[in-house]
Length: 203
Image 1 (cartoon, one colour):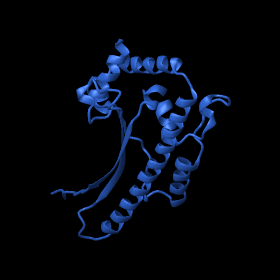
Image 2 (tube, helix red, strand yellow):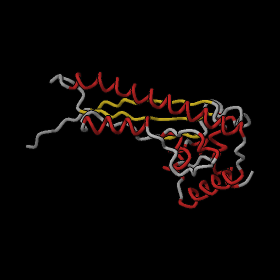
Image 3 (spheres, one colour):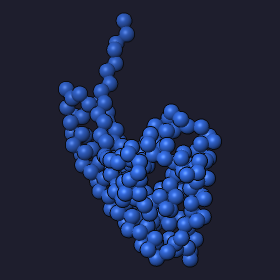
Image 4 (cartoon, helix red, strand yellow):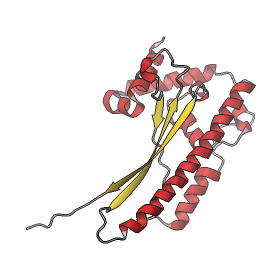
């Protein structure tokens, strides 16, 4: 196992956000990017691999849209409650956490049994306090636009329309094509946080 793979598995055990918060050094981030580029250079775009990536892309598109619509339902519940003058809720946040598992691939690592090898927190949601037209345009761009940008015509992955989250994994994370193809399970959390603010009058 080379140093790149050891570093990747270290972040997998810790959780990516924990790894960045507690152990992040620029050289480590560069090493993880080098690992990604090296694996991408070796990746074989066989018919089977392209079908696998296409299937994962479709699943990510469907589940991320469902998560967004769940967030809208939660917001629809919170907004009327906030109008009550006696409500506890001063404000709220809705966030997303996406976890990827590959327990068979990493069956030799006890810490990754039941735990993700990578997690991310995509920023998707536009709260209702924004312009309604802007919110609709943002949602349409997220889930209806083609995010195949950066892939040249003729490339094997140009054969299907990329979802926003699939594009995000390819270009904005440390995951290689092989890491994405190896995903066995996806876990998405929609996290609603209600907040209370109380100002204390000055004497």
